Amino acid sequence: MEGGISHPIPRTVEEVFNDFKGRRGGLIKALTIDVEKFSEKCDPEKENLCVVGLPNETWEVNVPVEEVPPELPEPALGINFARDGMEEKDWLSLVAVHSDSWLLSVAFYFGARFGFGKSERKRLFQMINELPTVFEVVTGSVELAEATPHNNSSKSKPSAKMSRQPEPQHRGVKMSPSKEEEENGEEEEGREEEEEHGATLCGACGDNYANDEFWICCDICERWFHGKCVKITAAKAEHIKYYRCPGCSSKRPRV
Image (cartoon, rainbow, N blue to C red; front, side, top):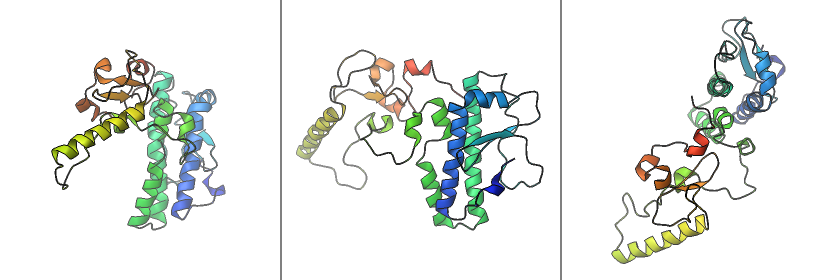
């Protein structure tokens, strides 16, 4: 099923990461570009089926392997049984979640098999963690074009999490600033916020950004909103991993 015999076995951190990227690319293609073809192959009338990403950025739907234990960790089985029992977007999202889990298990299987130490495992995870997950791509949390790592061709907008509220400049063990320094710091911070957002308009009310107002960006459409316009406070935003504005919430799947 896997076809892994024809692919070189990765033995170093870089090789395992490249194997991960290839398999991930194949799964993303199946769940975004080749959705119709993928759905056709997941016939509920067949036995347990699973989707596998291959190192050459292709994918296949097949039955489980016969040998026990298998050469590689098994993907989620029975994905075809739920195909017609769920909304397509929810089904694809669920397959994406299990695909992410499988990708990690394969990568760290190779790490365990070839004796990766603590520093090597940490480096591998950090490299993997720089990439958006399959689930994030499939559900639209990130654009497909942005799923390629290390794309620094243009200056990206700060994430909504970082830009929701200016952080104080003096924290932890640093000594508290004098009143004059604090005032100067606030003025500088205000100028930076204004430069960062420029003439950005609120996606709800259409008014300009003001540095004394709480401001939040939708992680899907990347429009900015006054917190009061979308009923989000700074405290609440701290617990939101991905913010979806009201318009995008009605369009995107949730699992």
